[in-house]
Amino acid sequence: MPQSKDQPARIRVINECLSQNGTYWTKQELLDKMLDIDIDIEDRTLEADITDMRRSTKLGYRAPIKWCRVHKGYHYTERDYSIDKLPLNKDDVRRLEWAATTLSQYQGIPLMREFTTTIDKIIRVVNRVKRGNYETILDFIEFEKTPPADGLKHMDGIIEAIQSARAIQLTYHSFDQEAPKMVTLHPYFIKEYRNRWYVIGYHQEEKMIKTYAYDRILEIDQSASLYIKNTTFDKSKYLSDCIGIGLGSREKEHIVLQFVPRSGKYVTTQPLHHSQNVMKNDNEAVIISLDVIVNYELISTILSYGNFVRVIEPASLISTIKETAQLIIEQYQPAT
Image (cartoon, rainbow, N blue to C red; front, side):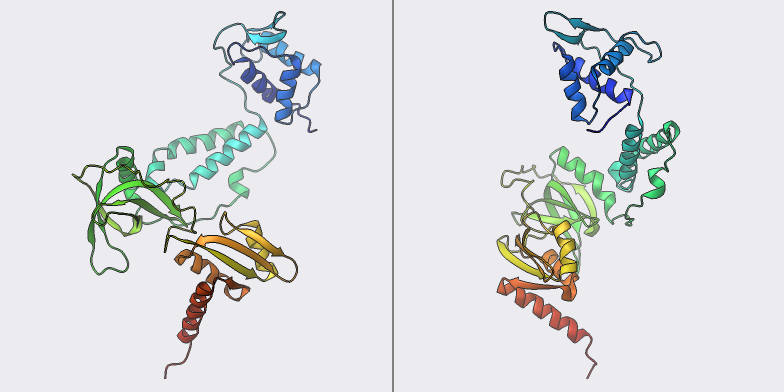
């Protein structure tokens, strides 16, 4: 069992337990709570920690801890008491720095801009309080750098419309239209896929659920239409049967793909979809199955593996991939 000599972490556990009003904690119960986070200590260490919490001036507080003979456990004698200020240990600092560094990757999103200063402050504070000879996470972890997605200027307006249950008027110019169109949309939720953002909602004119890419939205205005609430689908499951955001025929198909071993290893460690099932995994091949909707994103994903993957079934998908491959070959044929 891992050992920990870090008193702040132990005090944090004790405080969290005792700050639950009306509860009494035996030594063993407190020790068991320590074990939950891999802190294995002896009774005397626990007793010393409780003594420090009650009497030590160096900690900056005096916790009202007493032993109750009736309930045979420790408790706080003051209702709602909790230690507000606990020192950060090395692991706490690492976690804070990791969180701040991760959040900083999203500072380009308008909704996150108001947190930019706060995130910077956290990083500066963490760097000041660090006690150790390790480099900052910012120095030895490099996140994938992607340019800010187009259309993020619409993020705040769309979020506000969803939260306030208001219909919006979109001026939308899709790639396959010659001119922009006006759309009355009742927005329900937002989806990010490969650094592109989409809003999904009810299209008032076409009376159906549709998806709109932020980067194709030219303008957003309020609509006078009464908001139509979502009563037709579960947002958490709406796109669960597909890769990406395209619903295609909306009917799932059983897909079987065969990969060469090297490429297959990547697929087994980073599944293409939550429905993925590994049917074979050896030195000859890796075969997986997926139960998904056949859409543009699925086809693009298969094609991205080139000749390292082969579609086993269904026949319709085999034909689609073969036709696409033939068109690619024809692109490189000399002009006649």
